[in-house]
Image 1 (tube, helix red, strand yellow):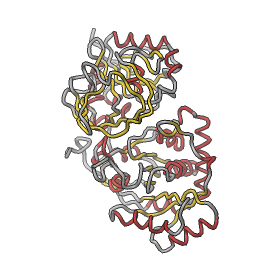
Image 2 (cartoon, rainbow, N blue to C red):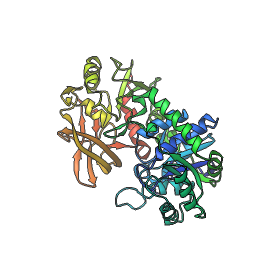
Image 3 (cartoon, rainbow, N blue to C red):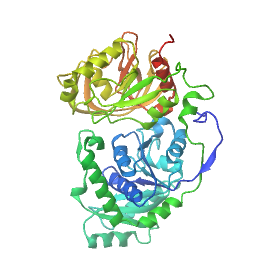
Image 4 (cartoon, helix red, strand yellow):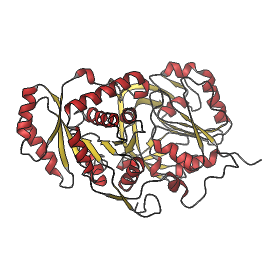
Length: 474
């Protein structure tokens, strides 16, 4: 853990203007303000780098719409605190502003692990000022005590401004501003209650932007207009520009997967890896495709809802997370693709599947036929499985050597029976001990699990997968 996250190279100072948008608790309006700021500054002509603290995949989809750049996650539990600044610097290179949306409450992190993976920790690692979004709907003078508490709790966290959300009226706003006057934390914006501006949600949070693209574009534009009207944009930009230099070596995918070695030997042509996308499979970290490409692969996205065959020349398949339960009938109806996936597995090609991908490879999901690659059936339940996990690779696989320890995240309301195959993908060691997932296929070429893992923390997984996609020489 003390190794430099890139393995080599010298630190250099980078200084993208940056803000962290945080809140006292979930539901205060972080996504509204952060996405609105990203979109408003982008509309003003700035190149904005969007980020999300924590493991969430959905908010970054809206961030991408707001900025025209991939939404990036900064999760100190999944990736390690030492990688947060390098990953940030990699994504923010060449941009004029970076906005980081926090997770949960400002000081909330991984259970029982102190500040680890909290928004506060990310802000400290990035030396970034914090804008606190406060739900002011049920308070007036008490807002000053709330802000004072958050601003003084950790002296290393610079709470440098407040945006008041869900303000009821002009009089209510005046009371709030009067209470905060002299607190040392300036009010940088006030947003009125607006139920029409809310983004639709369902069992795992907001509906992903990819599932409602036209409406999502309109929602993001509305958020930009709302934030622009209610916030002091010049003061917010000045605050972002006050962030001090950040001494860091930016993360580089090539250095991570290769070090001083050459790319994976590809016999003259990069192996083509098909990556599932579209509305049913929206959960993926951008760094995964960057690592696969740096290892020597060509990645091609396909949509299991629409495409009846895999991309021509597919040597490997990656199926990430998403909402297959919402699209079960459509996925089942695309029988030609399900057959193509089975044939790929039968041919011994490597397959890596996470969560939604695991369900898609199962026999059935809520009674709808899936690919039938794994001997398990899945169904929706009312119970939410959510949280960080520590795991170890039980056996060698197309993704991990036996004994590799990783940190991951589970986030689903489905149950797969059985939970693990005869050869499990992972042994969960914390917070409980159990076996989970499947290693399958005729040559052990399938790795399928509920566990979401950020490959930036274990780049060996990307290199190993690409190596197994390389065709044998003639």
